[in-house]
Length: 422
Image (cartoon, rainbow, N blue to C red; front, side, top):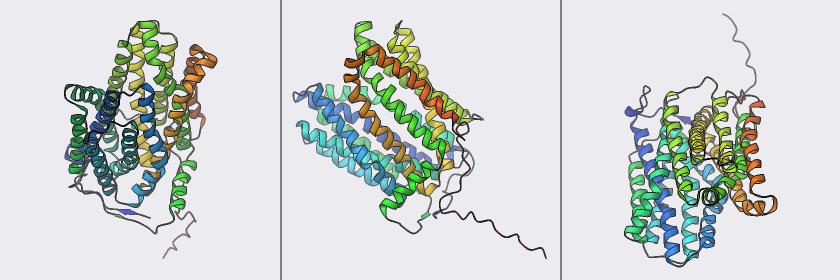
């Protein structure tokens, strides 16, 4: 069993006085900036070289392939090594990939390789970040820390693509890759002075055994397994079709791309509000609050199936963004509480792998499904799945509180003999 020492600067509940969190969070914010500018840069570089929509789709399929291939390995090594080391190595590797883009790469195959490599590094960085976040925060600080992470992600999603498009359009794709390199490099530099809590690893097992241990932590907790399965199904049946059909509905119903861009921006605005709310709100039944927030995604296919007005579509997207971040914060905080620290990265990677498999499957099947059963029928399926799949998990034991009473693997559960009275 790993043992941890309390990190410096975590006394009390104030994040402002937690030096290690500040460094970790600022580094994460920079990595998010790089992650958001990078795809815009690659897209414009591919289009400038004569690429088509099919080319762009093939290039970004490489990211999903990388996540599927490396997700479990990323969680494994984030639990085997100091999390700071894994994050530094991942960001250093992404710096090298961004630097390669400065060479003026235009081949779709090479651009796809860059996307694959960045996605592979991301599969190591994110589980390490979530596990390190838990270790540098006290339990009282974790809700605010998870909420600030959500805020960084949403701000990056709102600002990054537009900034990337402006930089690349005003100058060149090389300048875009330079901006990505600067963001990743700054994120790396911010991590160097981070003092992660000292971890003394226990006896190592084989990689297969350690991955199996991580899967066991998921299976033994019904609420954890239930959420992972629900999110994966929702990704395939609700979220992926909505991503594909939003721009089509925007053009067919509202005569342009304005609704498409505005709805995505408002999704991020709602997410930003959800992150800010979660910094203060501590629900008595976090599972009920989180699952309800997740189920709100059913409003998106509802808005696309019956787009009665722009305002209705916009209102649904804002509400969904709010609910998603409330869910995300409650999920992360309670997962950090429930899962042993030495296995947290592996459990996080299982969650990510499930979503990474089902999302591209849903994106791929949406087109044929529209042809086979029609857009209204597909969106109706999305509405039912969006609401029903998450809400069905409330029937599982421990779901409403995101809590289960199970012993840690390897923990001695043999009753001890009473101490004799003197």
